[in-house]
Structure formats: C-alpha cells, structure tokens
Length: 236
Image (cartoon, rainbow, N blue to C red; front, side, top):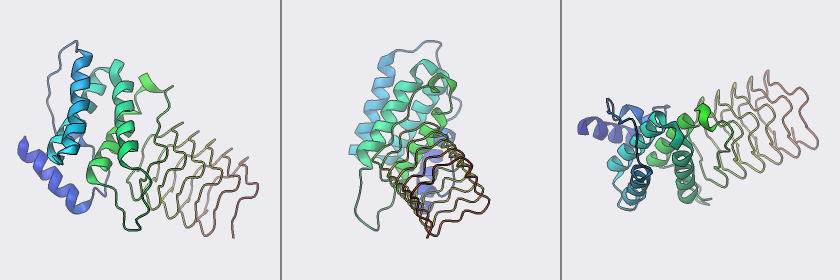
C-alpha cells in the first residue's frame, strides 16, 4: 500500500499530474462502519492541514483520499468535506504575480477530489466556491463545476475540455489560453472574463453572459453562442 502511494507521488511530481487521475486509486478496499462520528471527519481535515504545514505530501494525499472515500460512503458529510477542501484550496492558491507559477501537485489532487465529490446528488443545490484562486495550468478535464463560484479565478492555460460549467460565475476570470473544447458554459456569467487565445471549439455558450468579455484570438469554431449576451465583447 505504501509503495502505491509513493509511486503515485513520484509520478505526480515528474508529470505534474497532466492527466485526470483520481487519488481515489491510492487507497482501496477500505472497510467502513455503518455509522461514523463527525469527529472522524474533523480529525482527517486537521491532518490535511498538519501534513501540508509539515510538507508531508504522501501522507496528505492519502488523507485526502480517505476524505473522498468518506464523502462517498457517508453522503451526509459530503458538503462538510467539500467545503473544507475548497476552503483549503482558496487559502493556498491566492493570486500570485509570479509568471513562472505552477500549481502544486497536492492542490491538483485536491481539485480532482473536489470535482468528484461535487458530482454527488446530495450537494446539487450547494454552491462550490473557488473564487479568487490561482489555478493556472490546472487539469479540470470533464470536471463538474456546475453553478460554481469562480469569480476572479485565474485559469490561464488550464484544461477544461468537456467540463460542465453551466451556470457558473466566471466574471473577471482569466481563461487566456485555456482549453474549453466541448465545455458546457450554458447560462454561465462570463462578464469581463478573459478568453484571449482560448480554445472554445464546440463549446456551449447558450444564454451565457459575455458582456465585456475578451474573445480576441479565441478559437470559436462551432461554438454555440445562441442567445448569448455579447454586448461590448471584444473579438478583434
């Protein structure tokens, strides 16, 4: 089991998690009791913070995986876990002015878990908050971010192909150079968002609000823009 975790860590640091690999695969065959105390959840959350501070990446990834498993087996705690993980990401990915910034492997792994938990029907009416985060280069392919608050998020160069961003708030977001091919952005609030040089091939922007959005040099091949608000959007 330890070898599996270590192998995952080494691979992630070498490739920086270029593919959508769920860390659910790190730990398998866990037996869960029928009932669980909220104290267990709090303990796991505390360990994530502790391992981050101690730079114990292997242990942190393993604990995050345990939280994903707990959210799966105890859906009544899904939102509590999701809220903790999203708050953790916000705290540790604040806007960074460095041009060489790269998302850390631990944050990428946590994002993968967040998007997996966010698919659960028990939290379909809760809004995921990843606003003001610096997620440049993140791999969010096929991620479920429906109705998420992504205000002023930096997703430049991120992979959001086939992602579900329907109804999401992306006002003032930086999506320059991002891959949004086949993404669902229907009804999304994209006012003043930067899509320069982004790939929006076959993306669905039906009824999206693109007021003041920057679409210069964006690939709009077969992009659905029916009933979208394009007032003062920049194309050239």
